[in-house]
Image 1 (cartoon, rainbow, N blue to C red):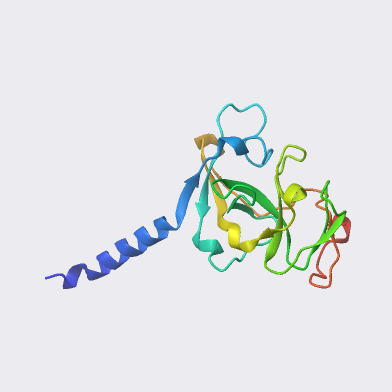
Image 2: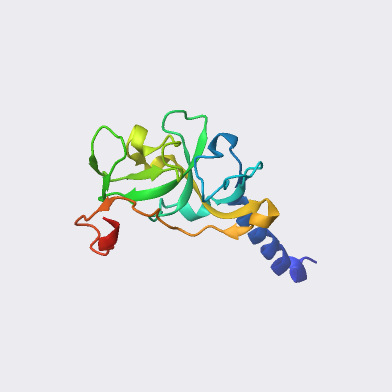
Length: 173
C-alpha cells in the first residue's frame, strides 16, 4: 500500500532533516557589533540571519566566516562574530594582553566587525572550536536585505605570515 509513496516520504524526511540544521538568529545585543556587515547604520530593525549548524559539524570554518558560538564569558549567551584567524595563524591583536598571538590547536580568533564596540577575542583571547554553534549563511530579515553572507576578512585584518599558510596576501600583513 505504501510502495508508491516511499520515495515521497524519503524526500520529505530529507527536507525536514535539512531544515532542522538551519535556524534563524536574532540577538539585540549584537546589533552594532557586526556593523557594517549586519545591521548597517541608520536602521532601526536588526538583521535576522540564517544559521547552518550542519556546516560546522566537523568544526570546519574558514577565515572570514560569520559564525554563532557560545560566549566564552557567559555560557547562557550565543554571540555572532567573524573568524579572523585559525589554529597555527599569528594575529596582531587590538588591545589583547599580548601584541601577537599564535592561535593554538583547536582554537580560532574571532572579532566583531565594528572595532571598538565588540567584546571578542581581543578581550578574551583565542576561542575553543568546541564553542562553535553554526555558520551564518544568509540575511533573511528584513526582506530588502535578503542576501547570502560570503566569507570576507575586514581590510587590514592583521594576520601575520605563519608556517601553516604561505598563501596569505602580502598586502594584508
